Image: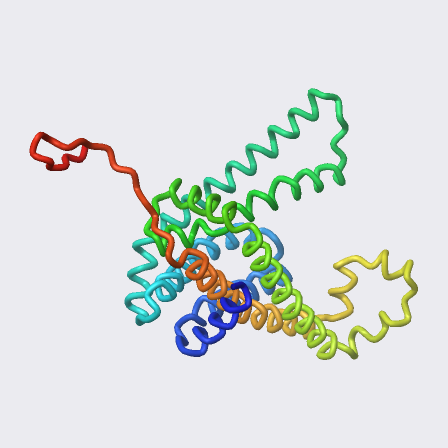
Length: 279
């Protein structure tokens, strides 16, 4: 099922050029943040990341609407994005807020228990808390758009869906990870080839020197040209990965939920003539 969904995602991307718009926007945002970080510092970047994220979500949600309907134009994309924007944003904020609260609860618990929380321990705790939560709630946006679920219903739907299809979900995550790894590795090779002349002095570094190399020193090696090359590589990476992974996720969600019926329990009663009255 995971492989079939991936192939279907590739076909969908060929058939619907509008699906590449979120990738273009993601690439522009990511490369723009990178350039701002290197040329102006962190002052503007921290604020723009949130703003860019909120704007980018409009295009992602619109893409999901197109994938749901298997057709559409830019107008229907924007209309669907406005309709489902907060149904996707609010669950994301709820999940993020709960992760933060849970993390602080764990920190306080360890503090009262007298357990030292060094950076390594904090990192392990963060990973142990985040990974299961993200995996269980990963499809909340699909439930919100594809099944018209409300905020907490979409999160609950994702948890149930993942819990009932553990093996298929693991295959989906493995294929997604392999896809990301392959594309990122290819882009890293292209980046190194493009900057080979500037990075060539690093080949004479010892292991100790390489371990002591700081990001600031690396930026000094690649220079301004390297910063622009990196921005181009980041743009290409986002351009490919965002539409591909989102389409794959949508196609997989469709397959995994095919034939399943979402039943909503209604409260009411029948009268003496057999007519149903909903409360």
